Image (tube, rainbow, N blue to C red; front, side, top):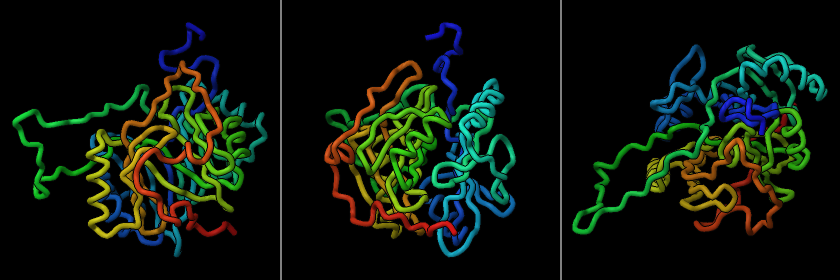
Length: 318
């Protein structure tokens, strides 16, 4: 390691530090407001869009806009350090990326280019939104002689603390790994060929910032949100299921990343995940990435996912 490198940053490694935000077009903004509000996020109006925040966190995680008759992932935006802006521009030009104009209504900050499968990608100077240490996780048990019962009428609201990761569909997972390692400096955590892969940020991040799922076209599979306990995972999932959202998947524990999970199906067939206690990869750790057999890649325990869990409901781009 270069001892002169800033604390918490991998030396001599040009790479994004966070997912700054994602943008999705939905058929019905009011349905989106209802879904994400009940999910526990702070949903705010801005012009003709909705923006997603976590309560108590000033960072904007998503922009939702009104679109056609199907949900579409519009773009992904990644954050970089200010002192790397010029180097990143030269690096991307050296990679031969195709520069593009910002999508309609998107901010022009930073660099816009065509990502894998043509997905618009934005790289911008931004504060590091990904944590630099493992998120706090709790397990509370009642002491002997005390009741641990929580009446349903007094159940706490579940409020995710931040975006944990984002999962996109890709037409070739291995080729997408190569592309995002080369352009964004992401690093492979684990994969299970040919179906799925997990990439982390070089400057300290959860086991995955970006997940890749095999499909015949691009799209969003899920957005994942960090909570602090298994109880919050289960209670959040139960709240959404009781409100009629589904079919859902959980509660369970993943193998790769090891996080506890509950996936809630949104009104458009993709998912939002409650996630707790995911593995964390510090900036100075070389993670032993490996290719895992299917039975050792998805979940350790929990119910079987329903058949449509990996279905891509987004239309093909014209």
